[in-house]
Amino acid sequence: MNNHSSSDASVSHPANYVVGPYIQPVLLAYLQQGGRLSTLADAASVTDLWMINPPKKVIVEEYFRLFLSASDLLQDPLLGIKTGQNAGLESFDVLGQALANTRAKSLTLRHALQQVMALERLVHRLGTSRIESDGGNVRFIWRANFQQHKAARLVCESMLAGIIHLAEQLTGRLIPVMEVCFVHSRPADYHAETYQQGFRAQCRFSQPHNSIMIAADVLAWPLKHIARPSVVEPCAGQVVDQVKNQLGKNLTNSPKLQQIAAIRGQSERSLQRQLKQQGTSYQQLLADVRLHHAQDYLQYSNLSILQISQLLGFKEQSSFNHFFLQGCGLSPKKWQETNRALADSRHRMRGYQAQNHIESQS
Image 1 (cartoon, rainbow, N blue to C red):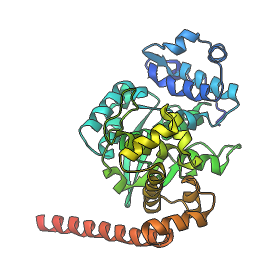
Image 2: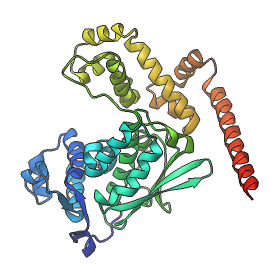
Image 3: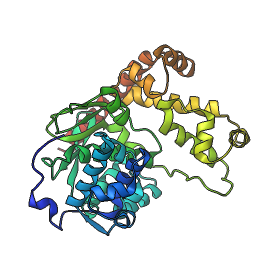
Image 4: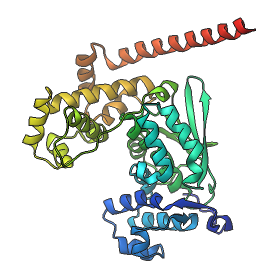
């Protein structure tokens, strides 16, 4: 974490703020690890009521103090990553509403990220974002306004983890990130596996910008409405989508039927019965989700096959290789080589078509 002075007057300027709902992911990440709300309130020099019902706008200085206090109390320098993973549409206030409307119109992830860039100043003044092309890939770049503040590591890691988590909420799919970059230097407490699980990508430090690199094709993924669990009997097909969504979030931990049923607040038998009525089973859905995400990671990420197998909850790469061969008829390596070659061919063809169009217009 950078140890520069945090006395910059601009941090406490009223024009620099985050909206009240922005502190909720910090509180959720803190409480999930056993933190006490009253202890955090004392450490951050606010009241319990202030945190439960925050003002419409929270000055950046207060937001940073809350973030740093929560991290110090838990002795958890990775609280930023966990905070980002708790961010939801409700955390983004007006921007969240706009993104929900974009999803309702069946647009793409690119449209959603464009909404983020256009409206993020309505939600916070922590920084600005832009998208740049990088060959067949794209970079979502986030420029922090307070990069030298001692809270910069927490905030930047939270922001990028939040963008990834938000993209996954909007598409209903795990986002195969190719690379995550940070301006801050590699932390002394850095553990590659922890960051890999947090971002599901290779992380690089001391870079020119904070950024996420993904394949350009991923931006064309359609946005999808994710049905929320309901106390009423779900409509046909809704249970299947909900279980797939929960499985996608928990693949690394090799989720069991009992765990998913508990998350949904129902018994194993009840969930099994509902899935059987839809002509499927828990094991079939688990296999489908694993295979689907395996293909996305093999096609669009820079992770090794071993790392991908670990993220999908396999204890041994050999088990993953066998699973994938049964599902696709090819080994993971052969499937990856074949599909990346096809993708390169498509990109070259698009380039030729674009060039021919330009020449025909000249």
